[in-house]
Image (cartoon, rainbow, N blue to C red; front, side):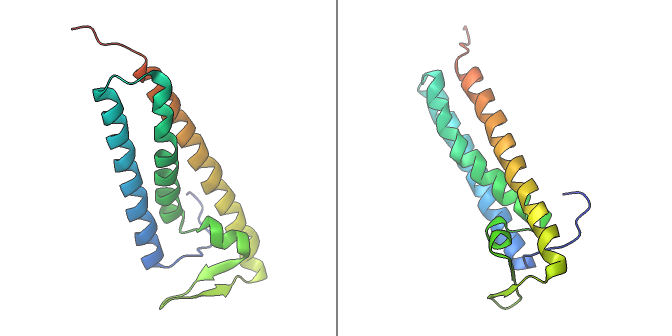
Length: 126
């Protein structure tokens, strides 16, 4: 996220979200490959949406150092575990960053899923 002003997750939180996001993206690829190997109908590729959404969500939260769920409740992670309330001067910035993460994740998931549905409908002649 460009212009990061405020973070509400720790470095450990970034690692957890990035790892989870990458795992979800790998799962999306496995699902898509499984569908392709079985010559599944195009609409079956809609099954990749939740995996891509979760993957994008995790990776973008890590990149932005912003947890959407914590931002919604006005909280931030603290080193060593637990959370604290965001200060008034942090709250608006973190919530704005969180909205950006949310909408970008949805956009990425929709675009990748649309591509998978369209590509899944194409037949490759041998």
